[in-house]
Image (tube, rainbow over all chains, first blue to last red; front, side):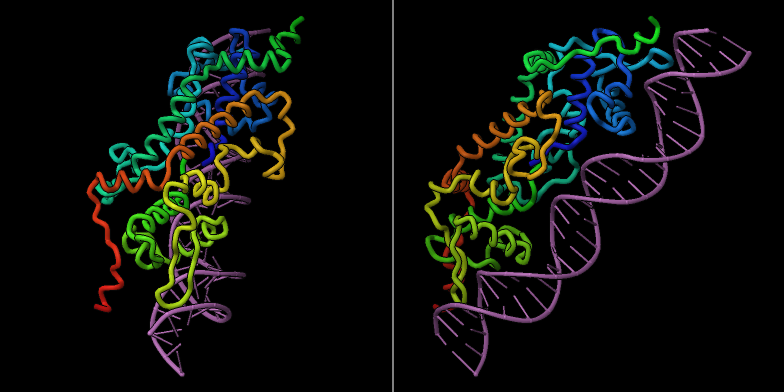
Length: 154
Length: 154
DNA sequence: ACATTATCTACTAAATTAGTCAAGAAAAAT
DNA sequence: ATTTTTCTTGACTAATTTAGTAGATAATGT
C-alpha cells in the first residue's frame, strides 16, 4: 500500500510554490533544488498538475509555475488524485472507470471493504490543505527562501 | 495507492476457510477453485499467513489449513500487515524499520501526513474481522460448501 | 508401500515505476 | 530582431516489483 513518488513529489512541489513563492512564479529548477527532486522528472509531474488546474504556468525569463488557487483551497486529495490516478486500492472498486470488471462481483465480499478503505483515505487527504502544510513547516522552523532569483539584480 | 494481490488473495483465502471450512482443515486446491486463485501462488501466501500465526497447517491426506483463532479474533489488519509488509504509504515513515532513512526528515512536512494516512488505514482494517466478512457473505446469499471432499466417502 | 498434501527454494515473465533525453515553441529581456 | 530563458511534448530506458511457475522434499493417513 504505497504512494507513488509522483504523488509525494507532487505534494511537495505544490507546497514549495506556496511556501517559497510568495505569490510570484517559481521555477522548476528552484523547486528541484530545494526539494531535491530531479528537474526532468518534476516537469512531467507539473504537466499533470497543470492539466488538472492546480497550477498555472508562464514561459520565458522570469516565468515559472504559480498556484491556480490559494493554499487554503488546494487539498491534498486534489493533487494525489491526479498523480496517483485515483485513490481506490483495487481496480474492481470502480469497474466503470477502469474498464475491466470482475465477474465475481456478485459474491465478492471484500470489494466493499476495499471501497470503504479507499474512501477513508480520500476523506483524510481531503481534510488537509497546502495551507496546513505551510503552517506546519513554519512550526518546524523551515526558512523561507523568497525572491532568490532577484538577488542577482540588486 | 493500491493493494497487492497477495493482500487481496490473503484476505479472501482466510475468509474462505472460515466460511466453507466449518472447523475442518481446508485444502489449498479447494480454496483456489472457489476463489479462482492460482493454487501455486496461494501456497506462498499461506506460508506467510502460517509464519504469522494466522493459520495452522496439517500435511498429508485430509490435511490442509485451519484458522489459528476464531473468525472474530482475526482482523484484516493482521493479514494485510503480513502480506503487504506494513501499511505505511512511504518507507520514510518508519526509517528504523526500512533501514534507510531520509536526510530531509528534519524539514519534511509531508512525512507526518503520510504517517497519519497510514494510521487511518490501519485503524480501518483493524475494525473489520473475518467474522464480519462471513456475515456479509451470508447476507449476499453465498452458499456454503461444507464437507465437499467427504462426499466421495459416502 | 502409496497416494496425498503441505513446505521450501529457486526461477521467470510481465508490468510498473522512476527517471532520462532531445527537440521545439512561447515569451520576455536586451 | 535576437537571444535567452523557461515551459512543452513525446519518446525512450533501466531498475524494480509483482505475479506467477516449477521442482524437489517432507509429513501423514490409509
